[in-house]
Structures are given as structure tokens and as C-alpha cells.
Length: 176
Image (cartoon, rainbow, N blue to C red; front, side, top):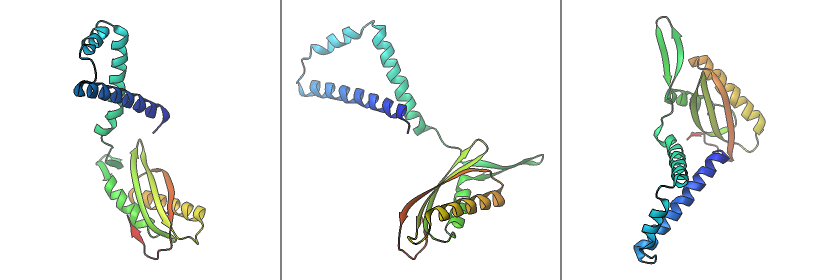
């Protein structure tokens, strides 16, 4: 999440806190009931406040928009004169997990795949043995997954990001 997005969330949260406290004060009878009409009349026909609240509305809509939009769940494998061949992200997910767990030194693996314009981006989280070289395992894992996915499905792998989340002494391999 970038800094601007966090700032917008912070401002909306402050506005929500202020409005909630104001309503709580009125509900408990701690605020003068005559103040509310004065506040409303203060806002009446004031274009500055109208613009400010419109900015808050747009910012709020911008913040909640990602919750209602869906990521692409398929990616194109082949486009020919005979038609299209597509593969689901779930199918790619299974392929990645099955091949990544075979990498020497990897104990557990979890991943996230995102479809981008002309391919996919794969985020891997791995748990490895303590005696293994992290840069070597990461590089081998990236090469293995990239070559397997591109060779098996034809999907262009734009990037593979590896996060070594844990170093463990477990002897049992598992997929998360």
C-alpha cells in the first residue's frame, strides 16, 4: 500500500472518528441539541465545504473500490486461428506448488499468482532448511518455476518474487 493511499485512509478514518464522537455526544446528551442546527446552517450554501465533502466522498469510493473489483482469474495460453486456449490461475497455482516443493532445501511453499497484461507474476513464500544457501535456493526456485510454467503451459512468467518466510529444522515437506 503506497503512502498516498495510507494518507487517504488516515483522513477518512479521522473524519469517521470525529463524526462518531459527535453522534455519541448527542446520543448521551452531552452536547447541546441547539448546536446541530447551527452546524447544519453553517454548512448551508458553502461551496468550500461542499467541495471538501465531495473530495472525501471520492476518496472513500477510491478506497473501497478494490474490495468490489475482481482480479482476472484466467490467463491466455494460446491464441490461434482455431480459437483461444486459456488456463485458470488456480491451475497455475497447483502447477507452481507441485514443482516448487520438489526444489531441494524447500520444506514448505505457498504462493500467489496475479495475471498481468501479457503473463503472470508469481509471489512465493518458502520455508527452507537452515543449512542451505538462501540466495542459491531462491535463484534455483525462480528458474525451476519459470521454466516449468513457461514450458508446460506457454504462459509468460513476467516475474517471480521469493520471500524466505521461515528457516526450519523440520524434515517433512508440505504445501500451504
